[in-house]
Image (cartoon, rainbow, N blue to C red):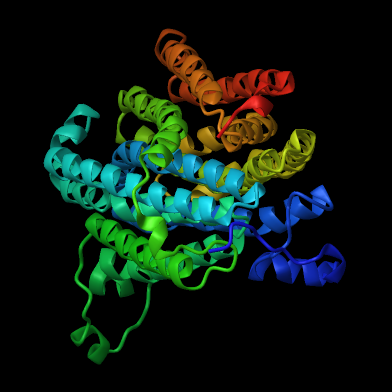
Amino acid sequence: MSNSIETTSEKALDNSFWSILREAFTGSQRDFTKGSIGLAIFLLAVPMILEMSMESVFAIVDIFFVAKLGADAVAIVVLTESMMALVYAVAIGLSIGATATVARRYGEKDLTGAANAAVHSIYLGIIFSILMGVVGVVFAADILVLLGASEKVVAEGTAFMQIMLGSNAVIVFLFLLNAIFRGAGDAAIAMRVLIVANLINIVLDPLLIFGTDIFAVFHINAPNWLIENWIFPKMGVTGAAVATAIGRGIGVLFAVWSLFGANRRIAVRAENWKINTEILRNLIKIAAPAVLQFTIATASWSALVRVMSGFGSDAIAGYGIGLRVIIFALLPAVGLSNAAATLVGQNLGANQPERAATSVWRAAIINAGVLGAVSVIFLVFSKPIIGFFTDEPAVLAYGTDSLHIVAYGFVFYAFGMVYEAAFNGAGDTWTPTWLNFFVFWLFEIPLAYVLAYHFNFGPKGVFWAITISFSVLAIVSALLFKRGKWKLKQV
């Protein structure tokens, strides 16, 4: 295999708007360490934003259909998601190691090294997904009890949690394989993988949740022959877990085919599968603190759910619906952040740290503009947005409060997300890890508890704690980024 990467000449490319837009969707062959930074951000960010939008659609679709089963069903999903957040932490942490290493090798024009990094990232994914799956299946009921679930929620939700945690491998590899594509600058494939997975989930979700009841739920006059020959069982909330696992699983198969059979920017050969302990050690040095980083951040959401559980299932359900809408808005912004991470890794590999820094500042400003516009929409239309998912008055009120209050900090989130992604893209995963620990565990959780119970803010205290904490994180991240120590990180 060649150790270098041949890229299309910038002069040979059509730079008209529609041509560039088509290139963003179909996949680019440009060298992102050269040429226009704005163009590089656009070509990477468009498919990455759509990829993250598709990721957020999973949560939105699930909660939309599950909400029709009542507050207890929503509580099952919310409590399970608080544990799935730990799975996401591992998946994202491993993905950061993959993106940083693949991007650095790619920037160095070392295609063999990029493929080796990809394969060894897959090895780590296999190990972690097996461990998490076993623990999740065996201790699902105990975890629900620990999270403060009622007996009814435990009885109805154990199977849901077992399926979600037991099939965590599809989540780990969906993130991990797409991170490999992003590191190589092939964000369009990652986007298509999520589109396929989501389409399947959207179709299967209502069919498996409601069975033949789907016709009554959605006021459809179905002919008798269709009802008599219906093949989908009514599985209730468990059906959402099955649909999600199947959708993500097929997405992973598509990603595997894309990586090993049809990828244009990175090619994995038989020789790349030989285990290299040095590569594994380097990946673990980056991924381990990244896993800890996102475990700290996502475990804080679990702690906040525990604070919310003191106010009952309606509060948990409203919080869960609001959180999913917020995630729907934030994940596209993560796409812009991922674009910045790829540009940081590749430009540091090409020994261009100032170009990497400029890429981050521009991505942060664009991100702030996007999320600023979203915050205005949430502030004005928070109630009708939550009302789309539920008509239960108490749940609607809690969800509206969560959306309205958290939206105040969206501009700050935009900057903080890009800065943390830039640290990770450079392989400096310890800086955001310490930031998350101090801000979320030593500041946000105590603040949420104090505001909710001691100052009698109730659930609103939790929402205000989220807004204040993420704003603090953004300010501190910006100051540390400006110091520039991340430019010296060796990967």
